[in-house]
Every structure is written in structure tokens, then in C-alpha cells.
Image (cartoon, rainbow, N blue to C red; front, side, top):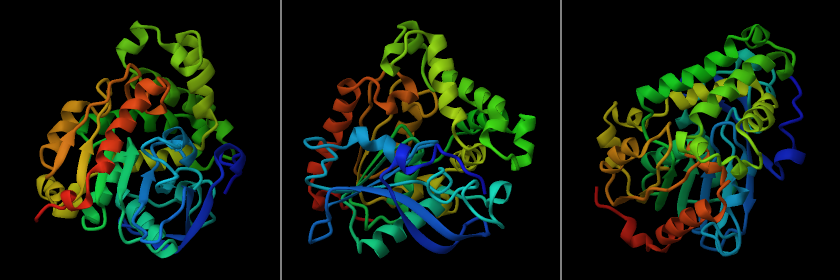
Length: 357
């Protein structure tokens, strides 16, 4: 267990912790006194049917979704009770660096997307008594969790909106994610996961960030020199002044835990490997929302899955920022599209979102 000031209430709060006790994992093993960090916005109504669940993306925390939430927005805290839940291993919830032996650092067990969703289900049912979810929405790895929610708990989830993510990770994306992993583990300072500080893995984290610079955006972002969307004035400043310092603050083992999980996101595991059967179980009304310039989860991959989902629609989001469009640097140009589609989805009566199975 090591300290990392990046994962603090000051930087990522306010958030609370929910204890799951000894949490058993799909791959085997247990996380003792497993904790989920979560943030809420708005109030739970008397019927407990105004709940929106928002799972976090790779490297992200509940803080990152604050730009998606606000009065008059689709995720309006004056109308909905919004629960943003940090995935296991993200640095705020139970993670390699903040856990005690025997599951600290490199001994942290393998966690799957299904483990996250089972844990989140316990949080919303045990802590808040929720039995119906108006909407699950998340980006990237949050989209992977959104799909898992809709397939695993079809009667509970009334609407779902996976943004820039897939239900089953592609081979191409698996290989890309492996380069992110290798960038960290090839640093001698990583020391098989037993470093004393994230600073000892600075070179590996730098290479990790550099890969994101290439793949997280898209060629047109660079062609149009849209650095100002991220508050910088050049490509060099984007990489050296934003991305590299950003990732170098994070815990390497946390990034590795999430990357392993990301690579293996696959709802077909719930249907003996049959993706069409798994997606066919979804009863929610679904808007599949890829980003048109995303190099990780391209619209073609997302549309292929969308066509397997009953009562679903494809809503392509336009962005010059590639996968990093999720950060909302384009302001209303991006968030306006997200709000428009989510408002339309939330306006659909629940009775219309139930599909005969």
C-alpha cells in the first residue's frame, strides 16, 4: 500500500465509500473489505424510479462526469438521482495501491467488468433500495459497464446509452490496449508492480501517455490543429504539457488493472459466448452512441452490435477530438449532442422500452 496524492477528495471529490465486505471475483480470489467510491447528484424520489447510474471510464473518476450533469441538462439533478460509481481499480475505489496485503500492489486480483457491475448493483440496491434504473449511461469503459448492466439486469434497466464503447471488445482494440500495458511494464522502475512510488515509473507512464496522444485523438484533430480544445497552443504542449503530466500522476498498477479488464470486456460471457443471444436479452430502450472519429471503438463496430439489440437506435456523435471527445473539450458542440440524445431517450415512456423476450 502506497500513498498517491492524485487520488484525493481535493482533486476528485466529493465522493463517499461503500463497503462490499469480502468481495468474490469471477476470476477467483477475493478483495477483502472491497470499497466502491461514488458520488451522487440530486435526490432519490419516493418511488425510487428516478435513478441514473453512470460508471467511470479508463483512468477516469466520478469527477470527470461533472461536465455532463447540470440543471436543464439531460442529466438534471433537479429531476434525477444520479449515481456516478468509480470502477474497481480506478484509484478511488479499491485498487492495487490503496489495498492492504494480501491484495496490495502486484497481488491485486484480476477484476472483470462483470465484477464491477455486480458490485454496483449491490451499492444501488443495498444502500439506496433501488429496484428500477431509469438510465445507465457511460463512456468508453463506462459503456462496457452499461452494456453489462443491460444484459445482466434486463428487467431492472429501463434505458441504456453506451457512449464510445462496445459490448464485446475487438481483437484490434485488445492489441492496442496491450501497447498501453507494455509501455508501463517495460519500465525497469515498475519492478514487477512493487515500486515505492508512481514517480519510479515515470518513463513508462510517459510512453503510456504518448500512445494515447496518437490513438486517443484522430488525424483530423491534428490536421486542423485543434489544440485549443484542451487549453494548449501546440501539439508539443498537448503531449508534454497535458497528457504526459496527466498520466504520470496516476498509479501504474491501477492503470494496468483497468487495462486488463478493458481488454476482456465481453457480455457474451453471460450467454456461453453467443453475443447475439446476450444482446438479445436486453429489455431496455438503447441508444448506441459512438463517436464518428473514434479510433478505439469505431462506429462500424458499434453499429454491428446495435443491430443485435432489440428496440435500439444508433446515434452517432460528431467530434474532431476522436475518443477524447469524451472529455467535452468542444463544449456545447459535443455536450449538446449528448444532451439532445439522452433527453430524447429519457422522454420515452418505460412501457415502450419493454421488449417481449
